[in-house]
Length: 232
Image (cartoon, rainbow, N blue to C red; front, side, top):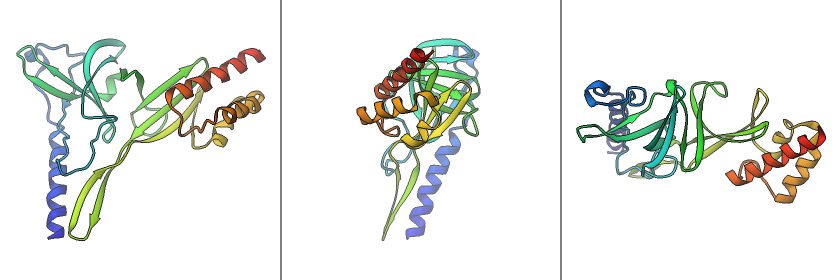
């Protein structure tokens, strides 16, 4: 009985994942701008028995802006699937039909969602991934958000659960981008003449590089830029 339950749930998830790659109708037939509406149908909807969801914040779509191939598109309904690393667009055709597609990563430059700037990059880790970017002056913080679909197994009870959002943090200056895990590893990559001042500032603010929010990251980058500017 346990094996049957696992097989049925896995089959439903695999099925849902497969149908997500069905090609949409011709854009010309739908009366849409092919520069934006050229993704694949998105149908990665987990069974109701799965605890959690695949999105960064919630299942609700939010008003957002997207830049593709240098062209900007405003007032779109977007969501960010962090399990599959896909940007999801919900829209209506000229005929009033509602569609949901995953935008092409190859053509995606960036997007603004929930007051966060995200960019598509291929030179940090293997593959084209989405990163939240926080920038000030010569410095940037990149945050990679991800979730995992996990098996929860107990006697006579098998279920799946989507994990909480995990974050991987990167620090960038000039052309160097480095993954950082703790304050110590972060300080190794900052300018040597400012290391002591930055360390004291982080201790004073009680900043932990892995647990900071956007405002705290921006505050830290501003302090670092100020230190460099005063020394030059």
